[in-house]
Length: 311
Image (cartoon, rainbow, N blue to C red; front, side, top):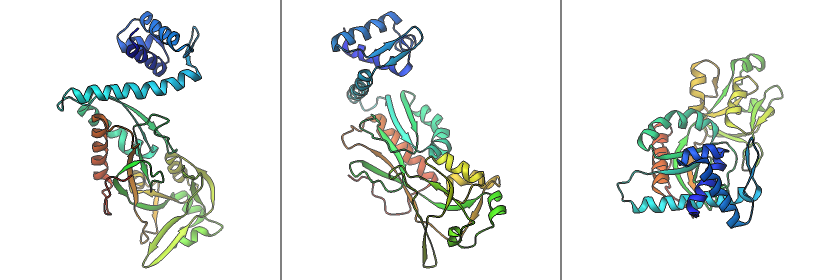
């Protein structure tokens, strides 16, 4: 048994959920893929997959083994790529996690250009606002807004997001238009609450104007932990919300949101791309990081002194 091929076969079955689909992607017969997985199970003396006539499910042991196999296959692929010469095109699988609004509005619309530049990179894109354990979940890098609290990560500061305060016309018709941020603390006003992944709590927003500075938490009818849901709740008229300019732009143009407190400003929200310190910066990871940084530079250039790498 070729253990490398057997691990490839097992990983592909887990990813596709099918021996038939795995065989197609590997250019092998279904029988060969089945035999390779069976031989791997015999060698390990554990069942990796539960098979029925209708579906294939990974066992608990199989799930743990799969995570190790994915890292090993990625390291082998990186080793081969590094030895094939500097002129070789980056290739292989890349696991990335990004916030949902950033994925929908910025990253995904630009991905055809990335694919045209690097057609041999397979991108597995996690779209969420949750905290991701990069090591345990075998994620190569994440894009995150706000100050990073995990000091073990290596982070590249790729931009600063400008924020504004907005509300839907339907909300303002019902509650009135506030003229000062402190009015949002009145009993008849509501904000949209956002539960930050790092704390699971809503955080106050700091605004300043002509030397006056306020920190607002406000009252809410609904609080969410996803950026797209947060925006949707604001457009639906459920309260006042704070948004990066790129998220508000199209809704302002359609009249779905109205800007508030335009004389007041926020400190820019830093945007980072981060990866584990023990993760080899492969050719595919390096070109992806550089491409995202260039993409963000057009949208939200860095306005403060940039610290490129930190540990």
